[in-house]
Length: 142
Image (tube, rainbow, N blue to C red; front, side):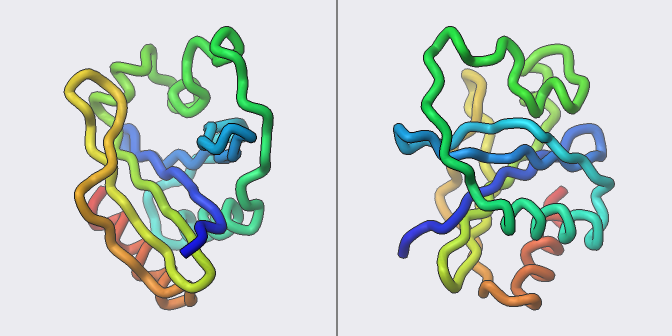
């Protein structure tokens, strides 16, 4: 199935952060501003996630290495001092949408820093009930 959009959700210090995720012309995803944040509550997360899904993933030019920010945008928005400190305490979920399914992955920390995809993902139908179940799964895992 063809992915129609992808979105990241972070939990850090009992707050959820959802950056805009752009797709670069090189094919990888890049977190951008704005980074929105909400309390970890079903209604707030659902509204924010649905808003990001409606926005989709804008296409942008892949930045040169020197153009990357020194501190990732989500780390700055969360008020963490360093990316490493943020990663130690944060949780990360990726939501990937296709025409009729939503895939949820709880990414795992890599021992050397950063995140790796899990062995398996959960899938939900692209319906109102599916969105409720996806949001509930994230909040239970938080």
